[in-house]
Length: 309
Image 1 (cartoon, helix red, strand yellow):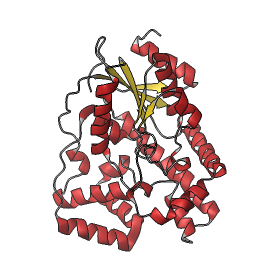
Image 2 (cartoon, rainbow, N blue to C red):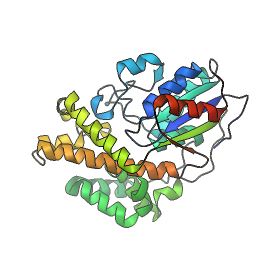
Image 3 (cartoon, rainbow, N blue to C red):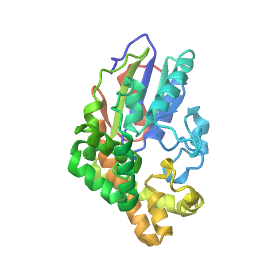
């Protein structure tokens, strides 16, 4: 990670687990600095997905210009490599107008791609890829999870264990090389023409889990079931291999009751938050910030940046 510079352009990164309140803090920081926000969320970029990904509200989006929010379609899925190029091109333009730009999100791999670039991955033979995917289609997500736990515990500890796309990739890499995918994610970082100042929002685990449970209930009230039903015909698409939708798809398929689906969403979201906490705890030079109110937390971050507003 680049050290924060006093004169050059600086990317302010606000990260942390789902439901901790990143959006409100980022908006306050960007508003105080008169700058713009790049979302680093791998799901909020999809136009068709709203309630289930806790997209910022129209009111929130009106307070500060946002990028990578409802900007793409589920029929043209993006990944970390795409986001890297997209965000770097955007920053090149934004830094002509602003000394600081804010990036906010909980997708650690997207933030890593933006800051350091992506690592070169080994090429997976077609035979291995086809074998793994055929077995996944036959035995489902539990088979994938069990294989990663047995063969690649490093990934299982921090990876998105409800995301078949990433699980398949990790297992393919292991079967090809005999090494964890994490082994290939430690290359020399690329140099960027800006510095970064990285802040990870934290709160006691019981409080975070309470916030997650409350958010899930709020999503249900807002119409998550109806949103999931409208996307059911596209459940095979990679963007929809996502907590909040997969559980409802199982409900529609008769595998879960409605109550069980809601409970599973909350549980899987808590599991995901735990993995995010592990990921962000290992980011070099990131500053852990105990979140209070959005205004007070933003004030603290700005003080640490030594920025006068």
